[in-house]
Image (cartoon, rainbow, N blue to C red; front, top):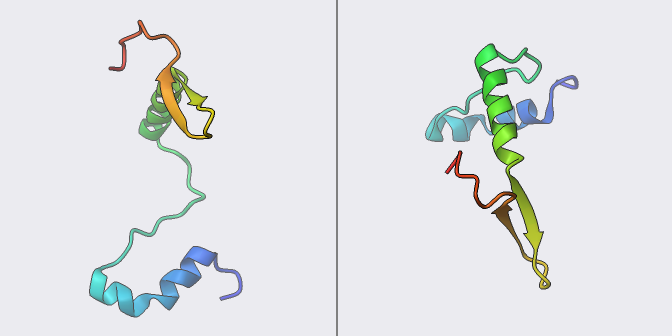
Length: 74
């Protein structure tokens, strides 16, 4: 068990709870991305680049469009 990830050790430790509440999805973190996922990642990164984070003087933040006239994703 020493070579297992922390997530897998947690899943083993909570086995009885999973029997009651149902299993969590378990998948490998080292697999290759599918072509569909790669395209989705490119799309999400493009969407994220259209926004910028503004910080108020009180430290709170909010997100605004970089170009207010661009309506492509809204």
